[in-house]
Length: 118
Image 1: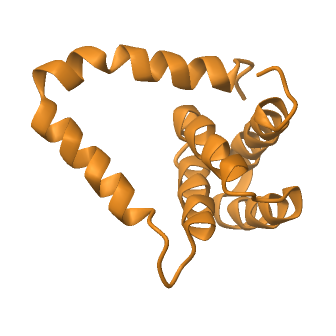
Image 2: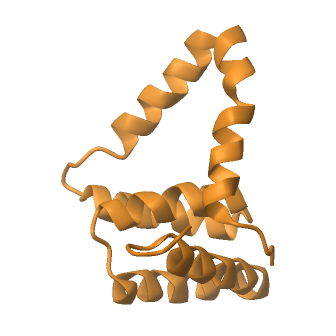
Image 3: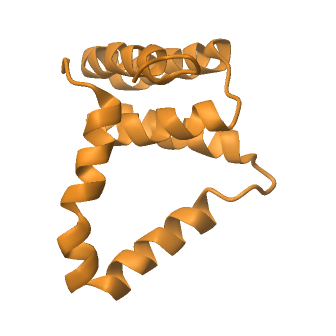
C-alpha cells in the first residue's frame, strides 16, 4: 500500500500528461470524450458508474485511478456506507491484493473528503 497523498498524485498525473495532450491532442480528447460518455448519467447512475470504475481501479492496482474516482465519488454524494459495500465486493473478487488497495482507497476517501485538507 502506498503512503502518498492522492490529491497530490492526481495533480501530478494531470500535470505530467500536459506534453502528451499537446503532442497527441486527438487521442487525448477522444479518451476524455470516452470517459465523459461512459460515466454519464443513464439507466445506471453516474455515482454507480464511478463506484464500478473505482472497483476496477482497485482490482487493477491503480493508485491514480483510486484518487480520481474517490474525488468524483465525493462530488457525486457517495456515502461511506456505499463505498464500504463496494470495497467488500472488491476484496471478494480480488483477494489479498485488492484488500491492500482497499486500504489505500479508504485512506484516500478520508483524506479527500469534505472538510479535509487534502
